[in-house]
Length: 356
Ligand code: 5AD
Ligand code: FES
Image (tube, rainbow, N blue to C red):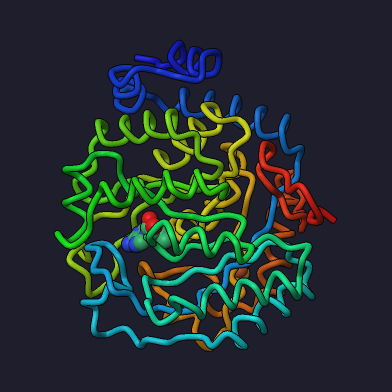
């Protein structure tokens, strides 16, 4: 049975009930998915034109104190060669990125306490001082309110913290007991209250995920109104408890990207590296389903292969410049263009400086 009427109503009212979301996710056909992609693409073009924002990711440490069951760099994975970049090395990555044209730097790491309380705030301060026209996005896991506040005061503009699942029981199947669903959600609320452009998100097809879980994720997005949504397929990582689990559905990932775009037309929505990992043209299809952001890697090539959240990650051998050339060809082929602009959320334009 077609869920087209539900897609139309989502587009008109920007909200559905839990039961309707469940129906949407269990009953959709290939035709519905194409229909949703068409609407989503129209909305993303209306807001962002044919421009795809670029963000440079610096994976500055793969040390992590957590032991998430799905993640390749979980602390229990003793086969990982751990590394940390120094402040100077992080700044060098930004310098290289700036020269290539990047105006957003995403600093990502495991939950590594060695950058706290002072090293990460100091690094952000230095980046913002050197590149006042750039946005700094953090993706460093859960922190307490006071530290989030301090990082914000040092100049961090945005923060990515996928909630992973809005279903508490499911959360507890993906994470060890030492981690708490309530704390993660609190952290997301703190981020928003501190004025960060805040990103949430999920993996599609993570073990034990049901349509009900994703329906709850969609309600969470509706209520929380994130500025960014990170959605990629689950991909098994060797030497983790989930290493033998199946990869998430490519089609469902694309459908969810479209539904997120229809729900939140202004949202910043990346075509993720995980999507490009399960299909050679996954990121292009993500864009054609409503995504408007791509996040190439700026990490030094020497450490790239050590930051493996999942197996077979793409672009671990390429220099950032090579990825830009490759991405340029890819997006042009489907009628889009890369842009290096800061690319703030339409509701969150910086008050001073900034958008050059
Ligand atoms: N497959 C897909 N995505 C993963 N992530 C972590 N491990 C995996 C995996 N095995 C995602 C999580 C995390 C983000 C940084 O990467 O959603 O929040
Ligand atoms: Fe990195 Fe294509 S994007 S090689």
